[in-house]
Length: 469
Image (cartoon, rainbow, N blue to C red; front, top):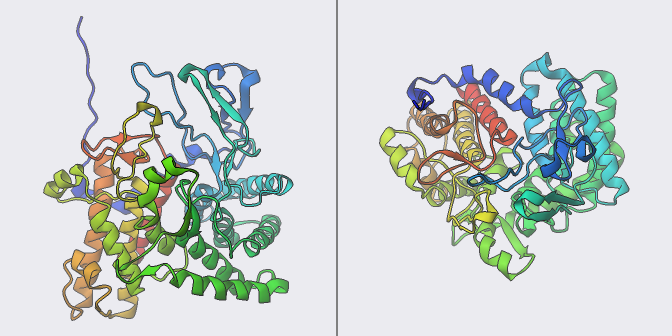
């Protein structure tokens, strides 16, 4: 019998016009957005997912992180992770990208408002206003989900993460002009409740960080809280609480500065960390120090990209969280590097394989750092000058910028640096479909497929590039 094998064509990454990819990436992303005529089914027991009694039906406005869920491992499961849930943080980051297509996706945005109100109400009733993860029908992810064919059940009592509410505020303010008046009014009510949530927790610790692994005082959380509250004041929202909001802004501004480590020359991701147990501490202890979420604090939060200490941190992230074999190969191709979450990251999306990886590139982390280079280039273009000092010198050296005499040449070099990272993402993509991770040796996509955040971060980076070109 003749066996037919198929291969996918390779994209010429050198000829890519990133701007022409935005429509494609947006359309790939919105497959994960539930609408009135596109309903998702999740299941309490995936082994019985064809049984309607076991199904949960999605509500319009739900944005699943990925359509991937565990499957029977024949011969081996790609992932044992279930991403068919709505994360408040991921959804807020993703919905913002649709706003930049003007009126094209208004119905998606208004569905998001309705779903946000639903999950916010459910969280309030449960007295868990910072709850981070919800089922597709808007109920809290707080029960047991069965994977009988994998011989285990997962206790899905999720956690509270203090980044969701501020990011939702930012997204709703950014999207206001696209909404009808009635949805602007609905958004305002959501924003006010989220402000109350922030005002009640900004002095405390987050139960879990952006990667849902460790608690404590998070640099990223503080930055997005600060950005949200600044936007609230600038837009004259919740004037009756102006004094409290300003007090919180002052506190967070001062508290963020505590994360700088002058000896290491980068911001610290988590101070005063809180671990679940000693075993977990051993696995994720490296995440509290140097972490890609430090760069995300600048892209999604309030930290100025031209802040010299942030630039120094970006330099350390690129140098220390890119030590993968695939980047050595890609360097010969003239692309990359791909960036991971933090050094010695053991999460590969398959906890059941009993194999611990020591660092894995992530698509969102790579896109975010590419966007950082574009944003610095835009600031230099706007200012028509820049300074080099002891803190930011390493960052500029990464782009082969040794002096500040020619700002136009510096802009070109910064853009080129970001382009190489996006080219690597495209090269390793599955015909433009983006997963969460990329194998650190072979370069193929791994873990969950079609991660919503991967598309959103890529779109955001391309948008930042367009501003400077």
